[in-house]
Amino acid sequence: MGEDNEADAAKRAASEARAAAWARKMADRIPTGWIITGAGAVLLGATAAFGGLEPASEPVPKELEAGEHFVGSDLDIAVLGAEVGGEVRGAGVVPDEGEETLIVTLEVTNLFEEPRIALAPHTLSAVRIDGVEIVRSDAKRIDDGSVLSYLQPDVRTRVRLAWTIDEDAVSPGDEIRIILPDSTRYEGSFVTRGSYWADIQTGAYVTVPVDAVPADEEVVEP
Image 1 (spheres, rainbow, N blue to C red):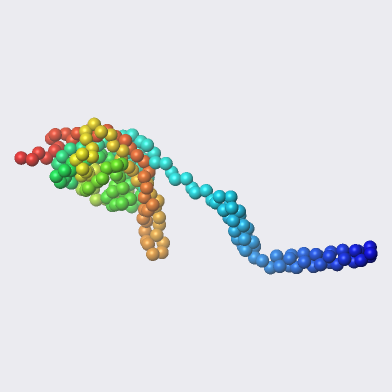
Image 2 (tube, rainbow, N blue to C red):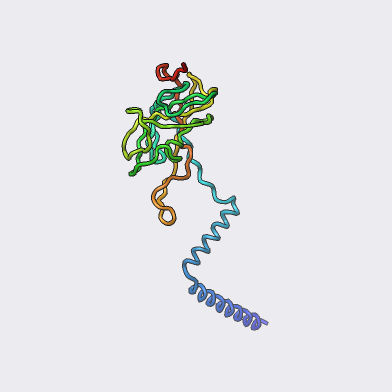
């Protein structure tokens, strides 16, 4: 009886040895990349079993005051002040009945190496007012009153950004939160060529008080 047990044990040992040798032989034939990929799949599966991958936290927009600089979307922007009134001489926008003009003064520097359209979706058109709908907009240089078509590289420019809004939206003495943009710059290499900005989001809020437009700057109806 003991001899039978010993024979069975010897057979099992020999069978296990053959199986181990076959496994090692097969493992030697598997590319290392497959092993890494397989291990990654196992890791992801285990992560999913415990609740999945944690999403990346969204950046919180900065809260700034007048005069503070914000760098985003390859622009350096400081909001200097805001005024509201009727039709403003030289603003570039004319309010319709039931509207008024809101003027925001900015200091802007294009940090990119090439000129950029001033009122593009990723530049000054992305500057908005929190909770206030904008009807029309225009941008002028303060130093000479000319239309601001492009932001030149590394040129600090004082800008008067004018909007028409509903006449009940903002009054002198109010505070407004101005939204400054942030975005990601991409370099096109296949279908799209050149540089472009996308994923536009709020980079900062700037809270400023609103003054009345000086009377001598308003257009008075005869």
